[in-house]
Amino acid sequence: MMVKDTTFIPITLIAVKELLGEVGFHKIKLTDIVQRAGISKSRLFEYFGGMYGLLSLVIYSELSLCYAYIYHKTTGVPILQQKMEMLVHYRAVFIAFNPVLRAYYQYEDKLSKRCNALKSAVGEMEKKFVEEYINKSK
Image (cartoon, rainbow, N blue to C red; front, side, top):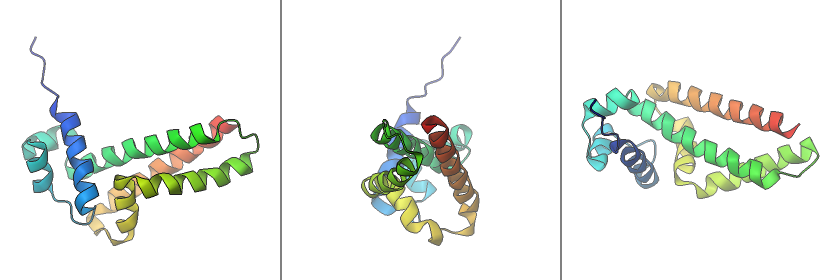
Protein backbone atom coordinates (compact mmCIF):
# COMPACT_ATOMS: atom_id res chain seq x y z
CA MET A 1 0.00 0.00 0.00
CA MET A 2 1.43 3.34 -1.05
CA VAL A 3 1.25 6.14 1.52
CA LYS A 4 0.42 9.61 0.23
CA ASP A 5 2.91 12.34 1.01
CA THR A 6 1.10 14.91 3.13
CA THR A 7 4.08 17.01 4.19
CA PHE A 8 2.72 19.81 2.01
CA ILE A 9 -0.22 20.31 4.42
CA PRO A 10 1.67 21.98 7.29
CA ILE A 11 3.87 23.79 4.76
CA THR A 12 0.75 25.20 3.10
CA LEU A 13 -0.78 26.26 6.43
CA ILE A 14 2.43 28.05 7.40
CA ALA A 15 2.60 29.71 3.98
CA VAL A 16 -0.96 31.01 4.35
CA LYS A 17 -0.26 32.34 7.85
CA GLU A 18 2.83 34.15 6.58
CA LEU A 19 0.97 35.65 3.64
CA LEU A 20 -1.93 36.78 5.80
CA GLY A 21 0.52 38.53 8.08
CA GLU A 22 2.22 40.18 5.09
CA VAL A 23 -0.68 41.15 2.80
CA GLY A 24 -3.85 40.54 4.81
CA PHE A 25 -7.12 38.88 3.90
CA HIS A 26 -8.17 41.58 1.49
CA LYS A 27 -5.16 41.06 -0.80
CA ILE A 28 -4.27 37.37 -0.50
CA LYS A 29 -4.42 35.51 -3.81
CA LEU A 30 -4.58 31.85 -4.69
CA THR A 31 -1.50 32.20 -6.90
CA ASP A 32 0.46 33.64 -3.95
CA ILE A 33 -0.51 30.68 -1.78
CA VAL A 34 0.43 27.99 -4.29
CA GLN A 35 3.66 29.77 -5.13
CA ARG A 36 4.69 30.21 -1.48
CA ALA A 37 3.68 26.66 -0.52
CA GLY A 38 5.13 25.09 -3.66
CA ILE A 39 1.97 23.13 -4.49
CA SER A 40 -0.37 22.99 -7.45
CA LYS A 41 -3.80 24.59 -7.54
CA SER A 42 -5.35 21.17 -8.08
CA ARG A 43 -3.72 19.83 -4.91
CA LEU A 44 -4.92 22.84 -2.94
CA PHE A 45 -8.49 22.27 -4.15
CA GLU A 46 -8.26 18.50 -3.58
CA TYR A 47 -7.11 18.77 0.03
CA PHE A 48 -8.57 22.08 1.20
CA GLY A 49 -11.59 22.62 -1.05
CA GLY A 50 -10.14 25.85 -2.40
CA MET A 51 -8.79 29.04 -0.95
CA TYR A 52 -11.73 29.73 1.37
CA GLY A 53 -11.62 26.21 2.79
CA LEU A 54 -7.95 26.75 3.50
CA LEU A 55 -8.56 30.17 5.05
CA SER A 56 -11.32 28.70 7.24
CA LEU A 57 -8.96 25.99 8.44
CA VAL A 58 -6.26 28.52 9.29
CA ILE A 59 -8.71 30.77 11.16
CA TYR A 60 -10.17 27.79 13.02
CA SER A 61 -6.68 26.77 14.07
CA GLU A 62 -5.86 30.27 15.32
CA LEU A 63 -9.21 30.66 17.11
CA SER A 64 -8.62 27.30 18.81
CA LEU A 65 -5.33 28.64 20.14
CA CYS A 66 -7.05 31.86 21.19
CA TYR A 67 -9.74 30.13 23.22
CA ALA A 68 -7.27 27.65 24.74
CA TYR A 69 -5.25 30.69 25.86
CA ILE A 70 -8.36 32.34 27.30
CA TYR A 71 -9.42 29.18 29.12
CA HIS A 72 -5.93 28.81 30.59
CA LYS A 73 -5.86 32.46 31.72
CA THR A 74 -9.28 32.28 33.37
CA THR A 75 -9.07 28.87 35.03
CA GLY A 76 -9.79 29.27 38.71
CA VAL A 77 -11.95 32.38 38.36
CA PRO A 78 -15.17 31.32 40.14
CA ILE A 79 -17.68 33.92 38.91
CA LEU A 80 -19.02 33.45 35.37
CA GLN A 81 -19.60 37.20 34.86
CA GLN A 82 -15.96 37.85 35.72
CA LYS A 83 -14.86 35.08 33.36
CA MET A 84 -16.90 36.59 30.52
CA GLU A 85 -15.31 40.00 31.07
CA MET A 86 -11.90 38.35 31.07
CA LEU A 87 -12.80 36.45 27.89
CA VAL A 88 -13.44 39.74 26.09
CA HIS A 89 -10.18 41.20 27.40
CA TYR A 90 -7.95 38.21 26.63
CA ARG A 91 -9.57 37.69 23.21
CA ALA A 92 -8.69 41.28 22.29
CA VAL A 93 -5.13 40.84 23.58
CA PHE A 94 -4.66 37.57 21.68
CA ILE A 95 -6.01 39.02 18.43
CA ALA A 96 -3.82 42.11 18.75
CA PHE A 97 -0.71 39.94 18.82
CA ASN A 98 -1.85 37.27 16.34
CA PRO A 99 -1.15 38.36 12.75
CA VAL A 100 -3.71 36.01 11.20
CA LEU A 101 -6.65 36.95 13.41
CA ARG A 102 -5.65 40.61 13.45
CA ALA A 103 -5.58 40.63 9.63
CA TYR A 104 -8.97 38.94 9.45
CA TYR A 105 -10.81 41.14 11.93
CA GLN A 106 -9.15 44.30 10.61
CA TYR A 107 -10.67 43.75 7.15
CA GLU A 108 -13.71 41.59 7.97
CA ASP A 109 -16.18 44.30 6.95
CA LYS A 110 -14.25 45.12 3.77
CA LEU A 111 -14.01 41.56 2.41
CA SER A 112 -15.84 40.89 -0.85
CA LYS A 113 -19.19 39.13 -1.04
CA ARG A 114 -17.32 36.00 -2.12
CA CYS A 115 -16.13 35.83 1.49
CA ASN A 116 -19.63 35.75 2.99
CA ALA A 117 -19.40 31.99 3.53
CA LEU A 118 -16.05 32.47 5.26
CA LYS A 119 -17.42 35.27 7.46
CA SER A 120 -20.42 33.13 8.35
CA ALA A 121 -18.19 30.16 9.19
CA VAL A 122 -15.96 32.32 11.39
CA GLY A 123 -19.01 33.70 13.19
CA GLU A 124 -20.21 30.15 13.85
CA MET A 125 -16.73 29.14 15.06
CA GLU A 126 -16.66 32.03 17.53
CA LYS A 127 -20.16 31.20 18.75
CA LYS A 128 -19.21 27.54 19.25
CA PHE A 129 -16.03 28.44 21.12
CA VAL A 130 -17.91 30.82 23.45
CA GLU A 131 -20.60 28.19 24.13
CA GLU A 132 -17.91 25.60 24.93
CA TYR A 133 -16.13 28.11 27.14
CA ILE A 134 -19.32 28.80 29.09
CA ASN A 135 -20.06 25.08 29.44
CA LYS A 136 -16.52 24.37 30.69
CA SER A 137 -16.84 27.26 33.13
CA LYS A 138 -19.96 25.92 34.88
